[in-house]
Structures are given as structure tokens and as C-alpha cells.
Amino acid sequence: MSHTPDAAALIELLGLEPHPEGGWYAETWRDEASTAIWFLLESGERSHWHRVHGGVEIWHFSLGDPLELAISDDGVGVRRDVLGTDVAAGERPQLIVPASAWQAATPLPGGAAGFSLVGCTVAPPFRFESFELAPPGWAPGDEED
Image (cartoon, rainbow, N blue to C red):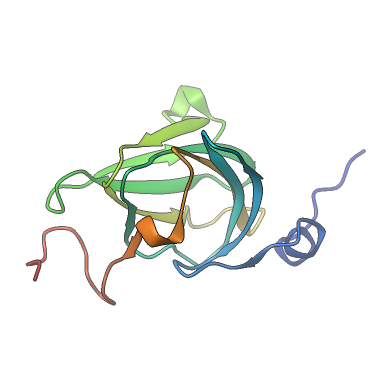
């Protein structure tokens, strides 16, 4: 019988580091066409609103609790989807965030694992220069400067 490691063990085993948007990450792939990372949020953590200019981001569910992914194409309206394995309940194992769309992620409360581990692929390749973190407290629908 296999045992699923807890969040602290996964952070160590996968060599994850703190991410500026919140949570933990490690880049696992980079070439001229795309990049891929592991991304982990512990229960109670969230990724802050952010966007990646010029790159489409594909989220892939890997392990742990389902994760809510909030996406705003226009900085006003928000759609919320759940990344997970219970497809019959509306969860999806893969979600796509269009280039330059605002996004934020939160593990669903009450999960047994205590974390959500996902993979994120960005094409063309992710560059921190194309990453925009929203000001603290900002959410879609707020007035932009």
C-alpha cells in the first residue's frame, strides 16, 4: 500500500521553493517552446491574483485536495472552476488560463490531504519579466490604476 506524503515531505522531496504569488514551486522543464513547474498550495494558503503576459498557462491536477482556480479575462468578471479528479462532480483534471488573464488559486476547504499539488505548463516559456502580481488586496472588479 502506498503512502501519500504530507505537504512538508512533498516540498522537500520535490525541491520546492516559495513562489512570489504564494505557495511552493520548482521548475521542471524549459525549452524554446514551453516551461513546466510543480506548484503546491497547503490548506489555508492561496495564490494571489496574478497574470502571465504573453503565455497561455495549462494547469494539471496531480495529487491531494481539489483546487479552485479563479480566472478573470477582463479584470472585472470571474469564473471559478475546480481542478481535481471527480469529473462527475464537475472537477476537471486540466484547466487553461488564457494569456494575460488574471488568476488565483485556493485549495478547497476541508480536504483530507491538507494540500493541492498541481503542474503548470506555460507556452511560450514563462519568464518572470512577464509575470504581474496584483497589488495586495486587489481582486477583479476593483478599479485599476
